[in-house]
Length: 187
Image (tube, rainbow, N blue to C red):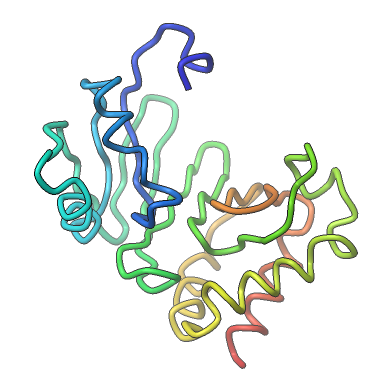
């Protein structure tokens, strides 16, 4: 992160999901970047305080809810709550300018990405679709109704890139992946 920032300060941290594999370093990040503003929904902040316990974070907090937005100059973030698309506080973020959906655990995948970042750099259907189905089944499979609710909310978005918290970034197989999620979540 320090290398990517190249000496600049981090302005915002959007917290999509509090599971420790995603959020376990928030306190360390806040210690290094004390000016950072935390952006999350109300449930997330309750969980964050539970995780940090006796060392509460003092960063400015911006609480967002369903349909909330955050204007960042040329970019505007739109927030969609996705409770139980793995955990109760999950939210996804849509960057309308770049048409990117930061999907938290939705549309994730198991499997090593072997140095590739995007789905169009691999034979996604052959090498990763089974891992995506296994991920869905193990991580969000029992929350089909909640996945259906998220899919309905996302239907009106013009998505050019899906950035899940696990697996490859999806830009070529968006329609196929949404179709699979729709099918799997009705089982």
